[in-house]
Image 1 (tube, rainbow, N blue to C red):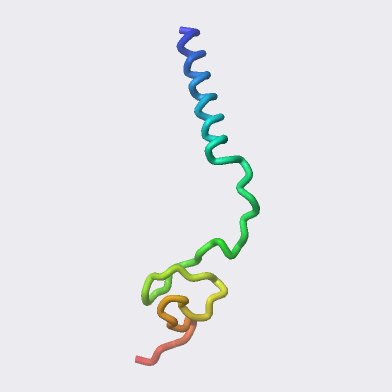
Image 2: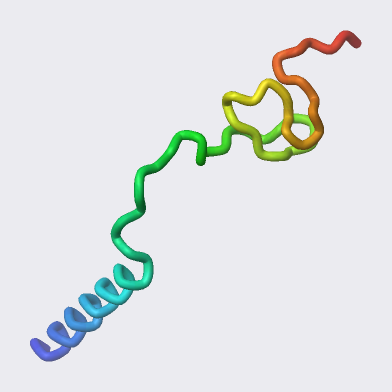
Length: 67
């Protein structure tokens, strides 16, 4: 029973080491510009909080359309 626990521990440790080597541990600094807010309500394209209009369909944001 002790041998099985040791084997499970070695396999888990190896998987952890291999995972860190593959993906690296330095992810760099996260920049707020990298995050995308809600999609455009008209074309569903990704937008940023600083956009005043959709970068894809160019519809303006926060403008009331009269019906």
